[in-house]
Length: 292
Image 1 (cartoon, one colour):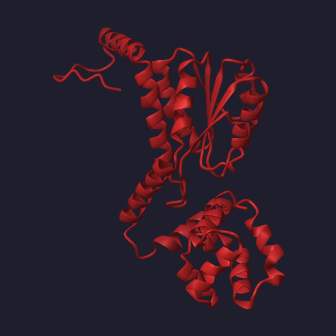
Image 2 (tube, one colour; image 1 turned 90 degrees about the vertical axis):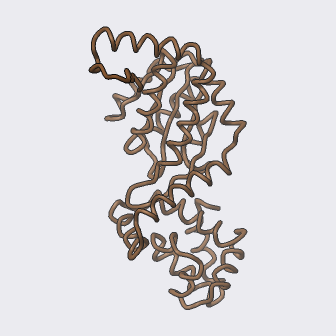
Image 3 (tube, helix red, strand yellow; image 1 turned 45 degrees about the vertical axis):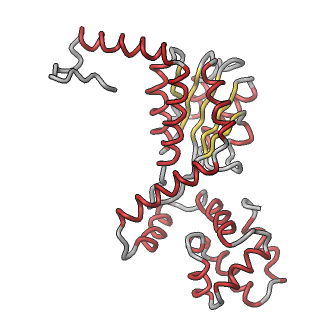
């Protein structure tokens, strides 16, 4: 239902009542704005009551307006250009305390992620990682920051971690050519989803590797190839995506794996401190803090 909302509205449009038709026509013509409106605001703009908007959502098969709005956001988030995102968020944030709005928005993304996360899937993913032969990590565009964060800490826990660069499709496949059974690929992708990451997922899946997807929805193109799916809320706090909840989920994943490999991690950290001291990587300080 979520992926086909515009098509559903177009199909049902001729049969809708006058008030519901106004709502549908506005959504189809201004989906980028409608996705971020309350039921009351949408009703005011099209000239119907808030209750009419709520009934409209119910008639389409949603439990209520919030569920319909979520479906519209999922459709919208993968369609908007950067300029459209900026225009939408400028409208949303006009006259508000931006700092307060954005930080509270991020808090809400973490809260929703915690409420909806499949904990069994999370710990099954941890089990798979601990026993992996090789670990490949891929993330394009803004998700590349999250991928590098994973690799930075996993390099202390494992000696078999590889970051996949996505400059070109051919280069990407050269790096994952030997992936197979016993290996794991971790892919991070949020709207707008990376085609490179999806292609890498498909290749890893077809070659028998275990595939772990970190994304925002079961409707994500990563989901069809993922053996383990970890979902985190990601929405637009501005023209840039909010990646706070995905980062928090990844931090939890790193912590859980680290606890399982505590002895190995401790030995590596002690070895690193010895190297730093020997080669004077950092200037000596009174507190002798060699933290990462």
